[in-house]
Length: 295
Image (cartoon, rainbow, N blue to C red; front, side):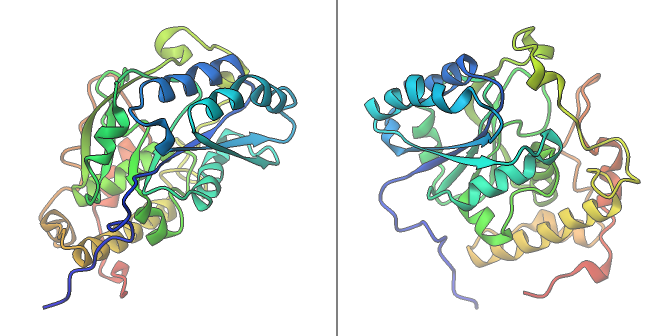
């Protein structure tokens, strides 16, 4: 019988939550978003905010220094910025992977500059999940969309795979893997996504310049390209191995591998709501024997 392995952070007293936040072209909107996180946290000092800024976004850095940094300091919130050569929305995953590589928290929380936290004590709710290896999905205003629009996940996920996502559709990437393993869970945290197509607000250049990497499966960078699908399957195998090591075995995954379970049975899209890879999900359920990874 194998010895149960504790997660890396199981013996750390203070829970730190690392907020990953690439942002571009938004100042007051960013300030409002960050203040909603801080004002609704029980203990803001447990927050680590990691910003991803483009080096040609000339207004943002002086704005942060003048209007955001003092508020962070008043609330004992650590905030660091990574400066990038502009990569565009189509490489959003590179921003978050890079930010995650410098995170020191036990939890990773994806965040958007047009998101508004609405739940008081949201950090306590995340802390209550310590020791659970799952993808947690806050509640939102996306009309029942089955993805974790702003995912919350243990830092061990990144440590295990050395990345969070290989495609700009970070929410879809992580959600697909979690559904394959039956480790997707809604969490009692509510946020408002104050996005132009949802609320009519923030209809700016940042919103208009989004370029989704989906809908063209012949493109190697597309979410539904066969190589991308198999990359998610390989990640699922690695996560399944880790789940076994921490005593959280997935019978669901065993049945998926055996061809006895549709991995996306619980990933239900309401009528009129679509998501990356929705039409390709069944292909990912075809897991060939040669995809088994020895660890």
